[in-house]
Structures are given as C-alpha cells and as structure tokens.
Image (cartoon, rainbow, N blue to C red; front, side, top):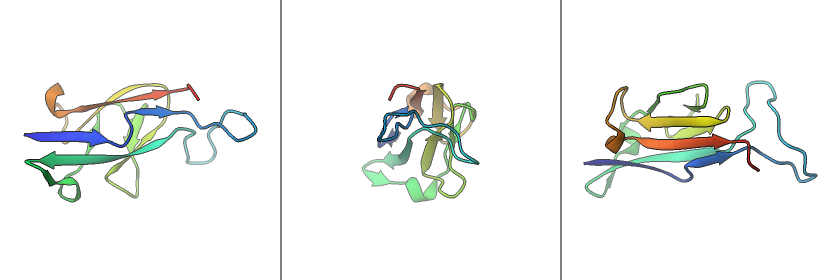
Length: 99
C-alpha cells in the first residue's frame, strides 16, 4: 500500500516578528509550506510520483517542486496521487489563519 505523509498537515498563516499578520504579496501566499512524501513497503517513491489536490484554492502543489504543498487560503484540501483516490490513499491538509 502507498502511504502519503507531510512534514506538517496544518499550514498556518505567517506572522512577522513585530506581530503583524502576513498578507499576500505578488504571486506568494502568506501561509506555510510542507514537504510531501509517498512511501510503499518502506521505499520512498516521492521522486517518481506527482501529487494532486482536490482544492487548489485552499492548497496546491508549488510550481517549481512537485513534492511541496503551499497554503493559499483557510480550509481543508485532500492531497493524493490521482484525482478521485480513496480517502485511505489521501492526506488531509488544513490551512488556517491561526498564527
């Protein structure tokens, strides 16, 4: 079985050192990112697969790395290896405004 994981499944909004809340700037989003991993039988398949999200407005794969997810707005997105994958083969990512 293939198992998906991430370095963080809750992506929070950035907060500056002065306490101000991060906001969008250009093409960037003010939320954390996380690395995605796909494993099967103890083997790392990440370089061999592509990840998809069911809601690109909440979280999406970054343009320059197929193993990095970025938060885009508060909500929940399911990450999988293909559209329509069973929940057991998917990973839930929550994007929140909590800092």
